[in-house]
Structures are given as C-alpha cells and as structure tokens.
Amino acid sequence: MSQTAFVFPGQGSQEPGMGAPWAHTPSWTLVDRASRVSGRDVAELLLHADADTLRRTDNAQLATFVLACVAHAEVRAALPDVRPVAVAGHSLGEYTALVASGALGYEDGVRLVAARGEAMREACAAAPGTMGVVLGLDVDEVRALADRLRVREGADVWVANLNSPQQAVLSGAPEGVARCGEAALAEGATRVVDIPVGGAFHSPLMEPARPRLAEALAGTAFRPAHAPVVANVDGRAHDDPDRWPDLMLDQLTSPVLWLDTVRTLTGDLGADLLVELGPGRVLTGFAKRITRGAARASVAVPDQIPALAEAVGATSEDEAPARVRVASGVAP
Image 1 (tube, helix red, strand yellow):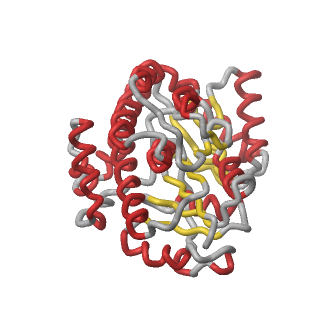
Image 2 (image 1 turned 60 degrees about the horizontal axis):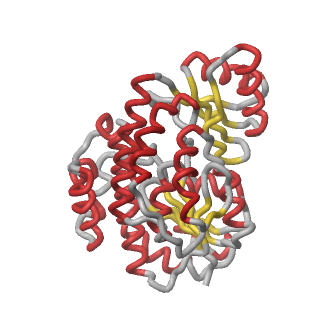
Image 3 (image 1 turned 90 degrees about the vertical axis):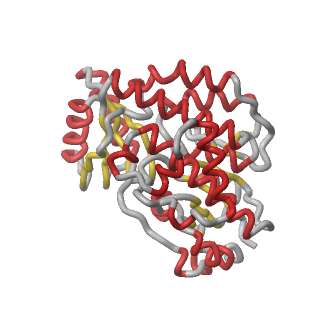
C-alpha cells in the first residue's frame, strides 16, 4: 500500500453547485452541523449559490472547508485502512487538514473558519488589495523583485504563495501588484494573471483580521494529531498542539510555502501518493510541477473514490491508474 498524504484545497477552488454530488452521502450531515454552528445556511451555499455569492471571502471559505470535510469523511468511511502519513492544506485548507488529523474538532473548525472568513472580509474592506499569479519565473526571483520594489520604491507588494518552482502569487495594493507583474514580465515571466479578489491575502494588509481570529483561537482546544500536519508558514511538520494558534495567526500575513510543503510531504515524511480531497484539482496540478516521484489522485466527487481505492495500492507515478492522474490550470 502506498504511503499516502491527504492535501486539502483553499479558497478559489469553489464553484456553483459543487455540493450536489455529495448531497445524498451519509457525510452530508456535516453540512447540517456546520449550519448550526455557524448560523449560516451552508447547504444553500453548496447547492444553490451563484458564482458571485461564492466569491465573497466568508462564503467561499466556509463552503470550501465544509465540502472538503465531507469528502474526507466519505473517503475515510470507504477506505478505513488508509492511514495518511501526513496531511496539509493550502491556506484555508490547513484548517481542514487539522480536522482530518484529529488536532481540531470539526465544530471548532467550523467556528474558526467562519470567524476567519468574516475577519478577512472586513480586512479587505479596510485595505482593498488584489493578487496576481506570476508564471514561468523562478519563485525566488519573484520574491526578490517584490522585496526590491518595497524597499526601493515603497510599493505595497509581497509574495503570498509559492505554489510550484515557477508559480508565485503576488499580493498587495493594486498598483504595487501591477508594477511587480510588469517587472516580472521584463525578467522573463511567461504570463501574469490577475486574480479577481478584493483583498491582499497572506500579506501585511491582512493584519486587521488578526484580533478577531485570535479571539476565536483563544477559546479553541487543540489535541495531539493522529498524523503530522505540515504548516503553511514554514513548510514543516508539526505535532505539538500548542503551536497551532500562533501558526494559524501567522498564516494570515505570511506566504503559503506550498512548494516546501509538498517537498516535506514527499521527502522527510515519505509520502508517495498525494491525494487531494475537496473541490477542484489545483493542488494536484501543483504537485505535478513539484515532484515526479509521487503519484497524484484527487477526489472532488464521490464517483472518484473507487479509482482512489485502486490508486492507494500504487507506489510510483507510473503505477497510479491513469484516470486518477490529473493536471490543473492556473489558480491562486
């Protein structure tokens, strides 16, 4: 059996109607529980909300988190013998990873995600920002460009995500992101793609969200995890429950080191199959560009679970069933 790691998507993977394939599964009860805890109609978000409604930060985060938890619960029920060697999640997905690891209770996770989404939405209103994907330029070069523009020209721009060796995401004030994108193209980037968001996530412009999230975290009990969770802020595995409140607060204003995260999962932790659980296939696409030594699978709908059952017996990319190997387009 493969050494499996579960990974969970973040905001940006949501789409209208994404809950429909899961609505008649036993784990759909998690949706009802989330609605009770959050005071929001989560089923409405997952089944009937349009793209504009789902794009709103608090809606996107709550809906994506809950559906990824539903997918994880169904996979665990179908494949009880699959015990991941580690878990990780991209930005918001880190909260799902903590629930999947047992470090965080599900209802506590719902409460934290609701508080985080609302706090980040308010921060976006207080300091409007934007984000953009830089493709085809080494991520260290993109980070150096952003650093130079901040120091020399006072531009409000930072690198928010290091997703793969040649995909970085810029975050900051619209003018700063535009200037850094132009500089990246001049240095050899193949494309710069605007991301339609109203906030500068994973940058210092999210600092106003910290107090509200800190208050929610102060009332949350973390437990020892069943499997290590690799953190976004340092790309390292953590098993000390007392560390997570600080790591989650730091994540608000720090870059997501997804490139390092995948290397830790497949290197130090020995995972040879990365399984993305939840809407979209973004993380599977990143993994393809980061490592050639691990197979990849995704479960975005229940019908993909039988193929995953075959994939867990694979130990290399060549052995993974073709129908569970997927690529992905650009996404934050």
